[in-house]
Amino acid sequence: MEHRQRLALVFLIILWAVIWASVPSTARAPSPPSTPSGFLPVPTLVATGALGPQVTRPFEPTPTLKPTPKPAPVLQHSVTGKASWYCNYDDRAFVMSVCHYRYPDKAGRNDMYAAACAKLRAAMGPNWRGKTVTVTGNGTWVKVKLIDYCASKDKTIDLYRDAADVLGYSGVLRVKVSW
Image 1 (spheres, rainbow, N blue to C red):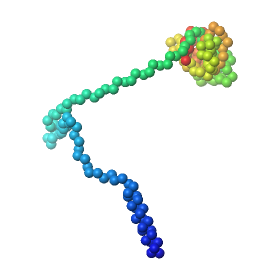
Image 2 (cartoon, rainbow, N blue to C red; image 1 turned 135 degrees about the horizontal axis):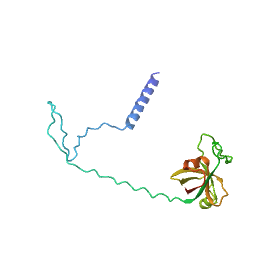
Image 3 (cartoon, helix red, strand yellow; image 1 turned 90 degrees about the vertical axis):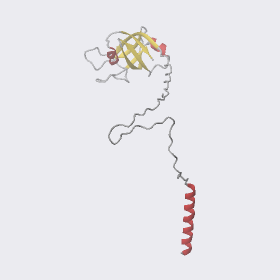
Image 4 (cartoon, rainbow, N blue to C red; image 1 turned 60 degrees about the vertical axis):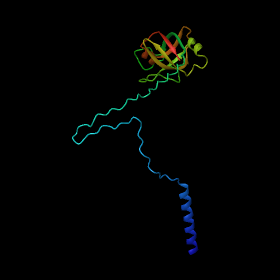
């Protein structure tokens, strides 16, 4: 038993020495306080409550950073032309019309979808479906997702009725379509 105790004691001493040697020492002598050049003491309140002598510091202007200019925005493409509307199932005051089967018009919800007519499809290229475009007209704008095909050759876009309502028209309106 005594042999085991000695062995355990030697093991603990070696373990303590390894741990002590691996921990860096952080104890250092305190450094004297540094005083920046041109530093003057701050006035203090004296026992009477009056301020001590007024001390002023020399003003050193802080360099101002000039904001980096934002990069020029990527030029947007746009097409102008006529817009009409289709797809209305949620308002009995207007004519009802058929919607895309995957994007039904639901009552109480703004359905912001549109059909791309020939002029818009030609300008956007073959990957037009699923893109979001901004339609501007009548002093306002709306973002719509292109989900359908419109066979009209004289119109640019055919909006869901909800999007047409945002633009404030019920017939045909001259618009600018940007993407």
